Image (cartoon, rainbow, N blue to C red):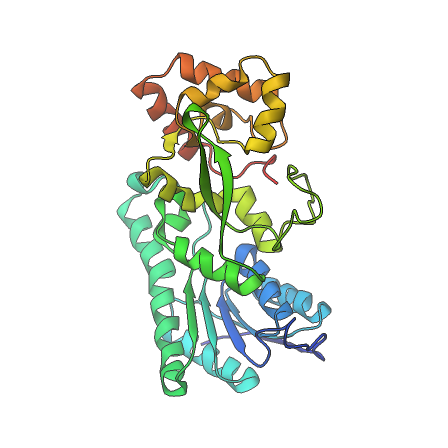
Length: 343
């Protein structure tokens, strides 16, 4: 087995219990050298945890450790392939020797994509995804539980999934792990309810993962999010760009308050403004609001002209058909969920 290790240990800053709820804990993050794993590692460090990283790239691991170092945290990293049980066990043992017993495990290592829709995957791709994304998580979970069970404590968060490889969040069953991330990385409730206007102008409470700091609008009242909005948490920025924060709205669909496809619902505060400025604005409430819509798949969302969004919403209402709904759902998958105007 060949491993490379990088360690950074610095004096912890801001040790107040209220500001560092994970003080004294060790968080092991697989695939923590890039993307969401790296962001989460940095946030866990700010919350007081010592960070143990496992990934395949020594260079990226060194950069991630350096980032935590500069933020005033404690980190150690070992390069290993999570599909190699022997190498992974040796890496975990080395990290335990440096930092202590693992209290939090985040299974984040996975194949980066996109490769293609799951239903078009070749068998070789399928088994590779299972080996990396699920097999790796299984190995690390077993190794972590061997110490968590005797200690009588521990948290395991599974982010990795086969659907995650293909970057289709709505096809993945990992919503529960996102809730755990929200809770770990910022104060406040996991879920956020907000009044929106739906079919026939009736209000309902939309459900989202909280992506902003608690009481974000206490001093401003209802305002739209903008680029670099300071109210958005670091994890929330990723969730908003990828639309992961919208996943809980499947509950609204199940309750009959929303549809999969339709105009996106707006807050009554803004509806009252727009109805007097934009002709035919209220016609968009003649159908159920949706998780995705004709305007969204054509790029009209977030900080884009409202008039264009209404134009596309009205086109959808006037030309509705099952075929159009299927086309919108297909375009949502093909064009992905990340959008430059999502703040």
